[in-house]
Image 1 (cartoon, rainbow, N blue to C red):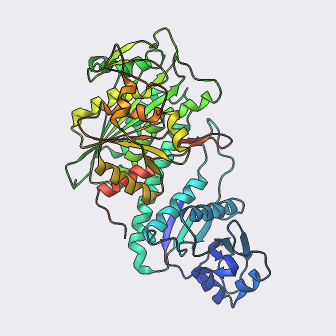
Image 2: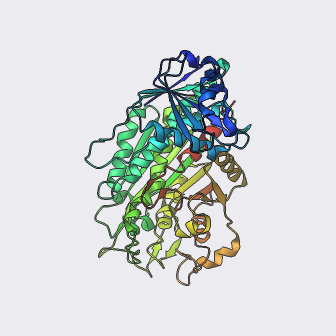
Image 3: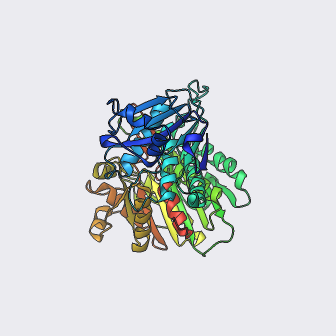
Amino acid sequence: MNFFIKNCSLDKEKTDCIVVGIFNFYQLSVSAKHLDKCSNGYIKNIIKLGDIKGEIGETLMLYNVPQIFSKRILLIGCGDKNNINILIFKKILKNTINILKKISVKNIICSLIDINISDQYNIYWLIRVTVLAIRENLYKIIKINKKDSNHLNLNLITLNILKENDFFIAQTSLKHALAIDRGISYAKNLSNLPPNICNPLYLSHQAQKIFKKYKKNITVDIIDFIEMKNLKMNAYLAVGDGAKNKPFMSVIKYSGNNIINKKVIALVGKGLTFDSGGISIKPSLNMDEMKYDMCGAAAVYGILIMAAELQLPLTIIGIIASCENMIGSNSFRPGDVLTTMSGRTVEVLNTDAEGRLVLSDALTYVERFSPNIVIDIATLTGACVTALGESVSGLFTNSEDLAKELNRASQQTDDKIWRLPLFLEYQKQLSSDIADLSNIGKGKAGAITAAFFLSYFTRKYNWAHLDIAGTAWKSGKNKGATGRPVELLSQFLLNQSNYTYS
């Protein structure tokens, strides 16, 4: 599907459908008013019949409107014009796409950008939100070895802007939106693959394959289990010892043109392509969803695709820490003591707390790049889901400045995060009689103790940990990956690039 920006003369545009808004009490949007005037009050006369009042969720399709070249006009209910927030705006766009899926249209003009949300959402943000919301509602999981029989006819969406002076910023927004969407879609596609296809070796092949397109700016190194042994990444290796599929770690180095500062930003993604829990085995109910335990790694792929598409003037290191946590004769056990790459020893009390072990060595490995900022992304704890639910990711950090930057990106994108503490009082929960620390706490504040564990391996740089266990995928009937937090961290990188949004 293609998107196009244009300052349209709506009454003269030859298209299959024009989409405009209608508010409560029959109030028309700016675009709808224009079409009504051109049609000598036809639209107002129709809505006075009462078929649509402007409530959210209401729609009305008009055909062959007098003096209008378009074949159809779709009226979308938008509710109270003075009380539209970003969530309502996305719901309006979802309603629009649901209607368009049911009719045979190949091209439309979307003129919903004249809806006023708030001062924050200028033309840049309205375009970006619109494109990403449309793409999200059109996304479908790719079935294995099946052709898509429900092909959508829609192939061109023109976004109508009211002012010609907004054309450049709107084009920039569209470029950003499409790059971010490419990253989100790739992260979703990768995460939704079954674990018999998407294993650690597959992830390493993907790193080499997808970044060939960007070889002028990206290099990829693959660390196999033999090299991991030489590096003494014993915690990482222990997690994968029970699996037939051996662990791999992909190291993706992106260097943009005309780098604006000397910061090195590292993104470390947890890539457990399947997590059975090991000897501390998980319950069988919903265990199939443990293929999503690599959503952090998938997000790193997506973010780097966005950066390469936009040629961001930054230096970024992406670490894909992938392995399987399976049960076998070589599986690590509760009671084992592991010596991590850092030299710290860890007593294993629960083999289902494996992600932090993999990340401990990956976070130590990344020190060799002398990073200024390291952000790890991981579906780490069920405790974070209990604390924050399915809408908000957990944030932990040792840097106030980094916390501010991530919160700024969160507010800009509406990809919600919430900072949880790393108080020293939690340290005692990780005490061990036989090792430097244990891999789980004493049963309380599980998300915090997991993050505190990681903090032992991040003393040499500014670090943030995003626990996305509740936000990376949805369960139930519409099970699937969400692509979070690709937009959040894409925005963080755009901000690091000193881009202005007006």
